[in-house]
Length: 464
Image (cartoon, rainbow, N blue to C red; front, top):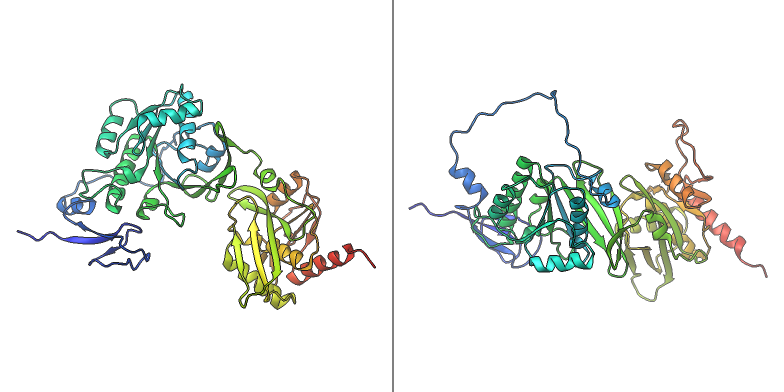
């Protein structure tokens, strides 16, 4: 009898090794490697079926193809993130921390689509049907004609969905609880998650139903399970938020049918999640315009300009090694900005603790925030108050030069819409025909920006 081959797979990251070991070399997780047999599973099926294949026709690039209309949910922020609605036959993976509001948002989306005469099916693998109904009653959506079921077998789910009219939207909550007969391993393992996701993706592509897979996240915010699932699906959406704030951010990390890094902003209320039409006003609400160390950054999230406040605190340290704490920004970029300020602007920050925070809980990842962070640091160090009606954006190079960034016109228009009177940013291209709707104070080098802030602080101090 042939010996059954086996492999060892990390249940945290999906890395494959040929022997068992206590620590995964790929992700560093302990006791996460499980032995799985190669005689079962998707790869084994392909091996057993090796031989003659069927011949399929090949087509050219040109042809008569009319794309199907998108399924619009009617929730503006959700439709924005998905690129204008759900594409028939697409598969979306949405992840977020427990209790962040994933199920609440999906129930609201199901009810909105059901009221638009679409067939919507909600499959729960974690909660009973009664629990889903209770949530719908709390949200006032119990009357929506949404079809519910509590099931974890992928084969049973697909057979049930094929019985009648193809659904417009199918919710699978969550993919970690699903299991398929083609894989001999426990639910939640890497092989089961991959096999269940592949079966559901195949159903979506062949039937034309839009499928949303809900995924758990790990302690560092990554969607649990094998990373290959993120490559298999059409879109990956993360649901972000902070327990200390009422709003939630829906961010498109990957989208084959729309812009990546697009965000939708929601506010958690007693009636569920409500849309925030003007996120900039929300992020800037309640700011102290008289305090030094605060700069307004005109940023871009996908195709949407967003204004947020960057706060900095520079204080003398009593420790041998000064502390650097960052919330909402990349700590490596902060270290680079500090080095540039010391090397090219003459500031001495080596004996100071530095704290940087993006107010409101938004995570900023673009380099255009360099200038706003630098201005906030200089303001806090010198005690000079920055103009409350000025916005900042620009990328700082290692030479101290301030480089232009994309979508400068959209950033300036958003600042003008919110009542800002000026902007400190790199000069607009002279031959691009682009004009600023508000006065622009061109910034070409960080030394000039630091000198202007320091001079304004000296002028503002009372004499005598």
